[in-house]
Length: 332
Ligand SMILES: Cc1ncc(C[n+]2csc(CCOP(=O)(O)OP(=O)(O)O)c2C)c(N)n1
Ligand code: SF4
Image (tube, rainbow, N blue to C red):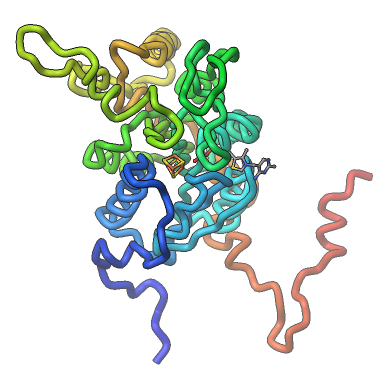
């Protein structure tokens, strides 16, 4: 008996996992991100046929192999355009893009920036370990100036990119940062990002214990600076939401509010070292999504998107009328 594709039972968390051998190093921060994505999909009850994870190249790029939904392992720095194509072809899909900081903010930074103009409804998670993990620890664009990890012969002579501020000025409408060893917090951010209508970016602090001996789990938790009174470490990471921070743009018609929000996000994005914020930095739900903009010009776009259209007749002959397309796109 044929199964109707929408009649899907609620899955268990285990059903979002695969049994593909995982070769990440022991203690790698990637594990926490993987788990957070799986738990987010499970808790949102997203059916597997309605979720797709795209990745670039790198240790992080292996993530789709370990999640039991559709997965596409694309080219270095090119995951976002692939994902945008899928989302626009089938706007009913929940599209998640994952990739390293080298992937997204080095070779792929042009796509990172220009996708902000479109506000396509997808979630982009950058695994930020400040190194190129898969190719043995070269400095990535997020490694701070003057920092020397154990994989570098000399301190880094490049200044770093600020991913949160870059996402803001590029036009992302949901901007957050998570920490891969705080799965409970991260999966909540991922859930909110998936539910957000528009382009969501999550910068995840992801320790690479093999090549980055500076931004380690111990460093983030402040083990090197013990409070003389309590004898306890003073953590560097803190949660924005615990400080009364409000990331939401409430009135988009009030330019003062928008300006103040932008200043607030940039100020928070510059905090690094003694105090490092995680949580949601910015949410603007008032910007139209790219899909909505398309539906303004193609009225049946949502009910008849490209992925649902018949491209062949019963006898196998093509249904696509090239001459119609040529006429439509002709400029003469
Ligand atoms: C076009 C191209 N250039 C270079 C490479 C080599 N390469 C593979 S992974 C990688 C860096 C990955 O670093 P990052 O994106 O930070 O991911 P991580 O491994 O840390 O998760 C590079 C340079 C490649 N595969 N393709
Ligand atoms: S090299 Fe670093 S990022 Fe890659 S799997 Fe090992 S610990 Fe993780």
